[in-house]
Image (cartoon, rainbow, N blue to C red):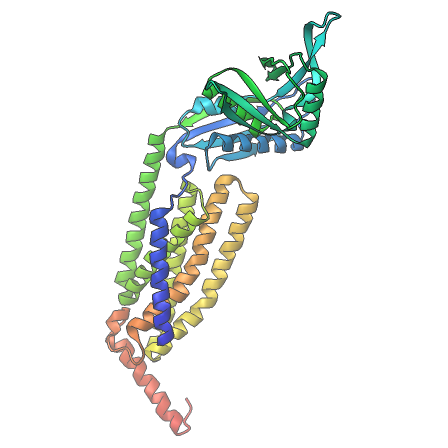
Length: 433
């Protein structure tokens, strides 16, 4: 009994901790629940790129994910569609136009050296081999007058190139091009060996930040064109979320009423365990974190049904044991033990299916598989540990004095006990049926 009391308080502490996590930590919601933008990009061939390869698409996907992270938008999905297209879903975007321009724009930074005539005048520009690929990072800064500028930090190779460029063209301008347009033509005052540079110009803060974000995200390995864009309004997303809540409440309420009607007190215990189960699962969702979508909610609700199914198996087994004349303590233990194999086998089959869906399915399918798998794993703990502990604490040991508490009739129990007692008496005298 002491161990069961310790387990009871452990369950209470776990439940309280889950409630705290749910209250404190937010859960990310998917595009279908909060609204946002859905964009389809297609990789483009050029004079230098005659065929789009899978390596190019992988690089494009990685570069776009970096750009989205630079936007400060979380829980975005980037998924390949066919050979040349990428689907991007950006939830909760306040400025879809900014996202569209940011994703499709290139980020080509290039330093060009001057072409000088015999008089030393600049008559044009040519590439010097120093580009955005030589950067470690870029940042927005201000000069002494408070004007916006861009600071650059080169990597080791880039620092060497920049030092050589400033040494050779000391006293002459060098041109800084961004996406094919000159944004600054500073005159080199001295050789710069520290690997740092500044781009000054008539920038606004937004202009400077956009350039910095694009540079830090990296250039697209292959040009991409936005061919489709859809917007999911926050009203539609909120409506979907509200309907999901209502459906979940109605479904859970119906299940709880059935458990109370059919199993009486054990059904009440199962309902308490179900609430604890739901709190633990939701807390895990927030800790992982799991991006909650309509498909994810469906997986969660399905796992609740499976948790109830486990309790039904246990209680039916327990009732069979009581009808066979077992004592209450023995019947409860035997009910759990005999139902465990069925529960474990069915849940393992579900988990294996979830693993297959997660590793081979699309992002939407992955969300469903992940929430269902987490729910199924926790449901085993809920059914086997929580329900069993509460059953022992509430009913204790001995005979079942009130069969109605288990949804049984008095005659079912009395007849079973009479048969069991007769068998025990016969056994004393070595009489076998």
